[in-house]
Amino acid sequence: MANNGNLRRLSPSEAREYGRRGGKASGESRRRKADFRKTLNALLTAEIDNPEWTPLLEALGLDSTLESAVNAAIIREALAGDVKAYIAIRDTLGQTTKSEADLEEQKIRTAAARQRLDRMLRKNRKMMVFFRHLMMLPTRIGLILQKKWRTQTMKRKRLIFKFQKFSRKQRQVFTWWADSSPVKDAEGIIADGAIRSGKTVSMSLSYIMWAMERFDGENFIMAGKTISSFKRNVLQNLKLMLTSRGYKWIYHISGDLPNMLEVTRKGKTNYFFIFGGKDEGSQDLVQGITAAGAFFDEVALMPESFVNQATGRLSVEGSKMWFNCNPAGPVHWFKVNWIDKRRDKKLLYLHFTMDDNLSLSEKTKARYRSMYAGVFYLRYIKGLWKAAEGLIYTMFTDDNLYTDDQRPVALKSTAVRSIAVDYGTTNPCVFLDIWDDGQILWVDREYRWDSRSEEARRSPNPQRTDSQYADDMAEFMGNRPEEQCEIIVDPSAASFIAELQGRGYYVKPADNEVIDGIRIVSTLLAKRSIRINRKCRGLTGEMQSYVWMIRRQNAERKNR
Figure 1: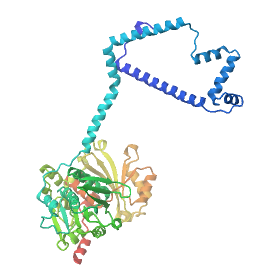
Figure 2 (figure 1 turned 90 degrees about the horizontal axis):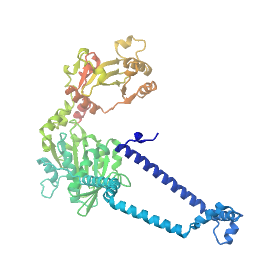
Figure 3 (figure 1 turned 45 degrees about the vertical axis):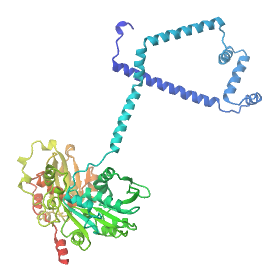
Figure 4 (figure 1 turned 45 degrees about the horizontal axis):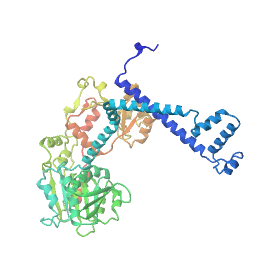
């Protein structure tokens, strides 16, 4: 029963929720009514062709619509004595049965009610002001948020590149082409050396500055190994630097001229086309263009044919070449044909180290030095065109090995498991059971089948099939659901991958970039972030015997 005991005061959150529901329901009701009115109005105003009503309506000079026909039908019913039809006609016309006294009394009551409402409003003016502000609150919040968003957007638009103090070599990059420079007649510049040495920042900006100073309305080449890598390594910072220096630019992503940077300053406009030089076929991309300059980022990663084709497009008077790279081997085509012949080609050569980047702290430089080992340390940190000779993993020691007793107790309950496969038919087929705890990769077990081994020769089937290898994988991994994990396989082993996938295993293709793989493994070994179980004798033996293939290098030396 409803009584005072059953009443309770709603909490603010409950009141808001009920208000929200009511407002939502009211809005839906209004929308339904509005839609009904629109539909009804459209139907009533639609023309009809009725043999009973159309001639009559047209004779009266009325449109033959459904509304006119309905009104005529109601009038006919009223004439036949239908009281409800008569009342409907009367109410529509605004007529009433009330006397004049009744109408006057109604006016008095209405005026009195309006006066009472006015007094209440004046009495509760402060409350009304509060409610008015309350009703406007969402709008005001929106305006505040909009203003804040606009402010943040403007800040983003005004992002500038924070230039640090330039080193002597960086300043030379910015000025070598100037009229006052003693090497202004050089045909180009080569900047090589260590990573994070400030080469790319100074070279890319100086290239644009030179082009805008010397030319107007010309085409220029800018190239990286891929367009994506160029955008990431060069273009992102370059656009900020140009904005900071007062240049206006438009980057055309697609359209008739895709991947083109249009730069304008002091009434001059030049066009910088971006290319990727990842393989021999890339040379076709630059055919047909006439350019006034060419900039190559990480030129040592590009094929010689692409560079030759691009530099061959520099037919505009006063054109120059700009080369930027980290070192590779001493017989690399760029080292042999460009750096070693720089005097014949009239090229300025600058060798950079991390000390030439004044923005790097000693802590940062120490961190980069710890990231590389072996030949990669000599190339990327020392900046030397160093030969990759002898053992690859010279940093592999007993500190990278462990026994079952030294394995962390909770490793297999806390680490992520994966199985790496080095698939082979004539060469050994190897499975490695790897556990990653977030800091160290633990290589705990290995499977190895060598068709040329003594064990295989004693076997009735020394050459195993994909199906047999898959059976061995099931035994190696374990058949329980909690033992299932990701399998990483060389993508060239297509038939074996298909066999594993057909059995329901999740297979991930491996990255076949050999040099990158060796660099990463070398770094992890040097940091003791790879530990190998001593029972994995095949793997430990290979780690201690991998050598660089230098026969081609020796042959190239003989031909020099």
